[in-house]
Length: 74
Image 1 (cartoon, rainbow, N blue to C red):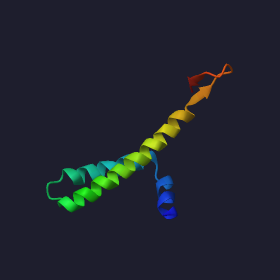
Image 2: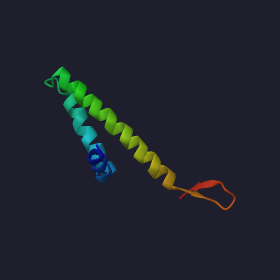
Image 3: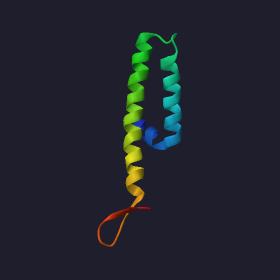
């Protein structure tokens, strides 16, 4: 499982969006079997969860604390 987590970290946000795009195209394909669609959907949801967390981290890093303790955008 640690190997899978390392692969997630190695992928850029852009690569993850690209992978999601490919999954969406496969899901839209009428020739994709139902069982495969369920697998693709689950994979996509896992990617979305990972991506959401990574984007939240980036957003937090883009905020900078002022001297009075308030935050401003960097």
